[in-house]
Amino acid sequence: MRISVQQEDFDLGAEVKAISGNPKIGAVASFVGLVRDVAMTLEHYPGMTERAITKIVDEAKSRWQVMDCTVIHRHGALQPNDQIVLVAVASGHRGDAFAACEFIMDYLKTQAPFWKKEQTAEGARWVEAKAADDKAAERWK
Image (cartoon, rainbow, N blue to C red; front, top):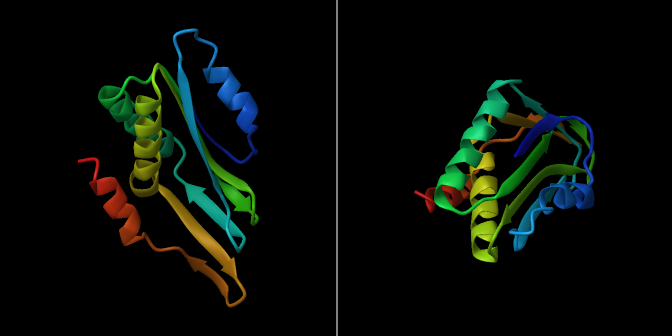
């Protein structure tokens, strides 16, 4: 399992290859989130953020057959089309890989301590939590 909160970009192909070397793995599901429309700055609490992500991944592992997992979340200044987040889950079967990947992403949006500030034409503004993200996470309870 690899969890990283970093400023540097990541290579999707290299990250997926790194978790798919076990011959018992039959599926890898991945999600990459991108910056839309406007530049943004992501802030977080070092240490606390990694612990929160580890807890989310541990919960996914208790629900599904997760053989390996990588979560990378970037922070700092990001531009439109930059990669923000990667969730990649390896499992013996696609159903477990898809479900765990979606669960982890839903909980990252609602449980991991990140703050987004968008740089709009009208000036910088903090992004509020979205009810749709909370609703998506609620379905896993």
